[in-house]
Length: 139
Image (cartoon, rainbow, N blue to C red; front, side, top):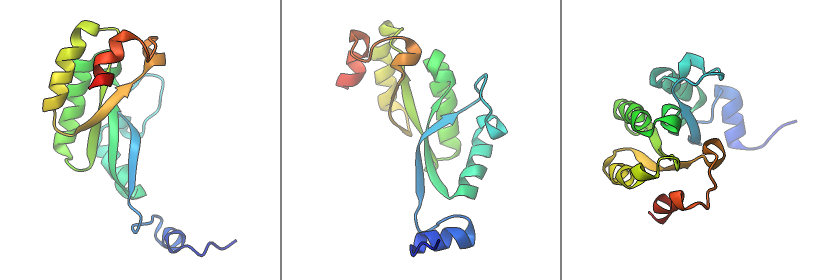
């Protein structure tokens, strides 16, 4: 079967389609128990894999932010600073710590390279329509 697309032909010839840059908008960053990530999900190995696959940038949520937002956001911010324009972050909102959400939103405003929020209502066992998410959703 032959595909007449120039992108397909470029992919077959080069192993990637440089004429069609790829943005990965759902990437995972950092180690996580029970899941295999080549290179342990660290920035350097991610960039190498992205280069090999033709991915020009990736938007990630740090696994650590799912349980400890402050630590996870710091880890993600470090990776973003090392690879500006290549790695971007999602700011994890944990509704189980409602007393921290307003301060987290102020910190998000100041954070470089974070482009949106990560909501994991099933993971946190809290409904997305619950009042603890309201400040982030209104933001």
